[in-house]
Image (cartoon, rainbow, N blue to C red; front, side, top):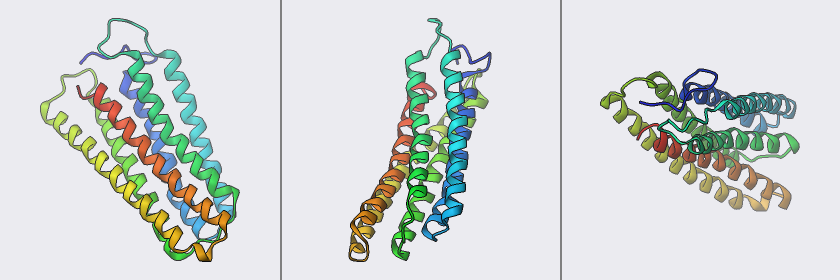
Length: 223
């Protein structure tokens, strides 16, 4: 398989995988952060949000380096614009993660058990979707520069199809979380109601960004 020319002499998917690891790290931090939020441990929430912000800054540095160093050669099988679209979609994942973390840290909010359960389920589902994405990029980085065995391509295609199913599950859980907020709206002040809805929608946006990244990978890596 032809590559796009490399980033600092490295294959394309190695650079994208390095960025994806920062995305995965941020989602790994989001799960305990959500636990701290629903259990009212505000100081821990602030510390966890700061750690996610650090991961987001590190991912931005990799993204900027990759953009600057991306080969502009016309003798490549992959269009530079397609790679930039993929990188933007993947960067949206960690940006949306940081967006949720910012929400969690700016306001102390009492969360009833039913809503807490729904938010934790949604957070877990989104994190698993990201793990599947990183699995695909790891394998593409390993295979880059080789003739892709058909069996490996079939496995990668199956994993990407699984990402689409996971994103659908996350959409379902987001809807369930929003319904839980409305079921409990009599126990919430209006600001808390809107605030918790924003958190659920922010988590759903992470899953949407993962799906966008997977679709870009299908166009670039699996054709």
